[in-house]
Length: 167
Image 1: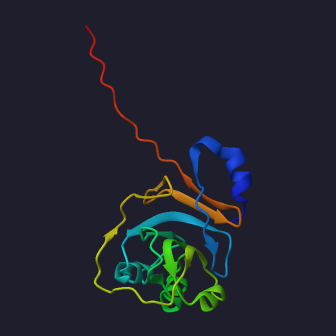
Image 2: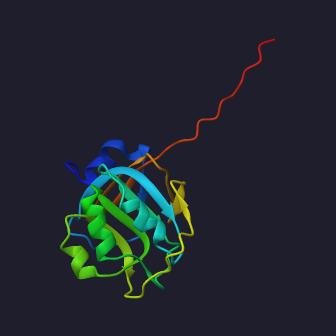
Image 3: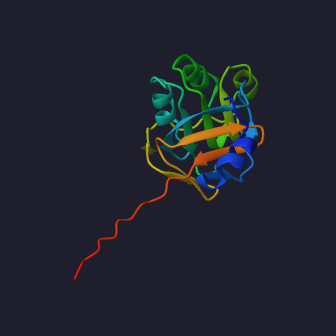
């Protein structure tokens, strides 16, 4: 990432949404950016593991775990798989585990916190759907930037067509 989120917001303010929710910087990279991919899951990380094992091409996976801290959605093995697959980062609205090991990886990871408890592995959830976290909508394909100051995402406006009838 070559531009700080504060500077980016100064340049493009109204085109960006800023996540007010305060997440912990856990990964070995504090600043990262890329196109958004999403997973919505609750206490089940099978889809997270599956997606992060595919080529990331510099994308950022936004995981909506509903804010649950009851079990971890990302651990060191899944994070290492993300690095090997070329992901830029992971934003988790929930818990991770293996904080120290993840902190040594060249990967951006932001999360609410940590919990050593493993999650279910049933594959329940949704992939590449818009997710809302803290009032900010993360849409697949939009660009997200993260650094020590916070998280910005491109605002994707819905364009409604108005048909005019000439008389």
